[in-house]
Length: 457
Image 1: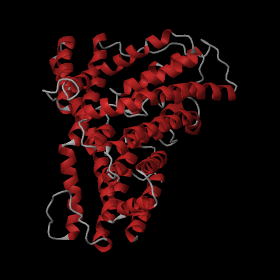
Image 2: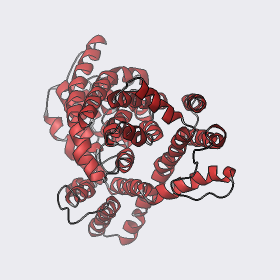
Image 3: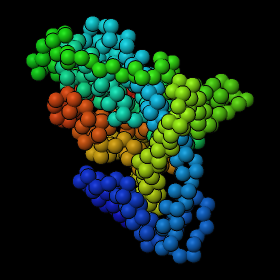
Image 4: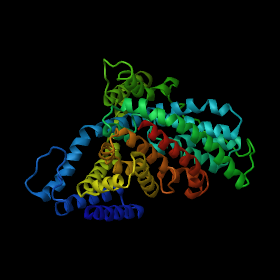
């Protein structure tokens, strides 16, 4: 009981600091260190060592050695996958392949003349693009430049167009997503299997529901705001073109790692297994070779490849470090006994695994809305899922999948999320106005994800 109280107090304090815009990495790390440091006093039988590490001989040092162990383990495994994905995405952006892909995908929608149908289909296209462009803010910026003017010209209100663009990355799909990779590793699955066998079956119905609700929400709020659909009148003077500096076939380049990963996996060619990192490197090097033939400036092309390594560094600073800090926090909650107490409480109350999954998703949703970060929410609590799931006799993925998808969805209901703030400026409204419009589609998506999670149990 004491461990639960201490864990709850530290969790509330950490949440409050994050709400006050303190850096989430620092808050989670310090909260975890405090919990680990208190463990010998509260739960002396609990080990504060990282996995099978040996003690330094002094408990005080063991607390900090846990961080060292987590950093070494994550940087060499999951962290390297995430960094390679970030480097590949950065290089694709540098050579114009990402822009070419966006331009190609949205081109058919520009020919349609039904404003709200284009809006709904735009979400579907954006969610597809998110598989290859893992940055929610980066994808939103590209769509604001390429697709936003088209929607406004068709007669959709700027707020409706901005709200849709703010939801295009809600599900965090694919091997390039840090959350997807963490979920797959935690569930002891390779990321290709997690994506194809679990994420896609759960995401397809969610995408359909979100698209339909995006249509309904946009029409309702535009009607409520007395917005009159007047095609062509709201168009800017000239719609900027993007992707023109890259050859057309560059649009297919971002798909190379995903295609290779899926083909050479247990799903298709099981005799050959291709690591995600290897696939990302092959895709980036293919882009380098194409640049050498097209640009005909080896010095500039070789210098441009540094963006791959810059992208790796950015992912370490933003994502991998957050995973380590959140892992330390989650470990502290486990060692003080808070997690065991909650499991026993749920079992004594007759809770089934479905109820616990809903509770965990609600926790993730609240934290994501408060912090504006789906990663911070999922990384903090996703580590707890395997222990909770095993106590109920179900596979970890049954709990991890809805938690991971809920974290991304809830981010689009947060007025402090970076992507929501960015699109609100384009929509000429406040982030709260955007969140009002995204709430219905996001809640619908969360319900579908929870239902799908029950099926996977």
